[in-house]
Length: 160
Image 1 (cartoon, rainbow, N blue to C red):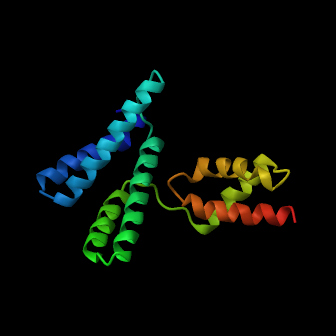
Image 2: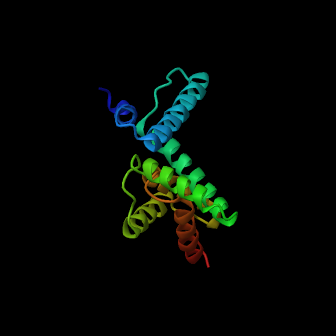
């Protein structure tokens, strides 16, 4: 088994197990996730020679699906549809099983510091370079919005 296929193989194996166990929620969520992975593979096939997806790309796809469910849940709560919000939250919980462990605040701060040291920002305009460098390590492990706020805070204190 190729290392780049391990997460996708795990998802497929767990989909099969969920079907055998008649776990409707997990089957539904993993079918949706495999469909998103397949769509990305087709999209990638058009732009490059290889259509293989790395674990990081699958984690990125999963993260986007989690984000969709968070946003939907918020909207359903605002619309007083708590039953639908609970369904979105349950789906999100299944998807989160396929994400790497979340980075701690200390780990995030350390990675941000390394990214700043690596990029050597000359002004606050270098924010994009710093966040790009930090998210290479934090992709799937931390919320990009949270990382962005911390970077803005650190960079702005450097150029006051």
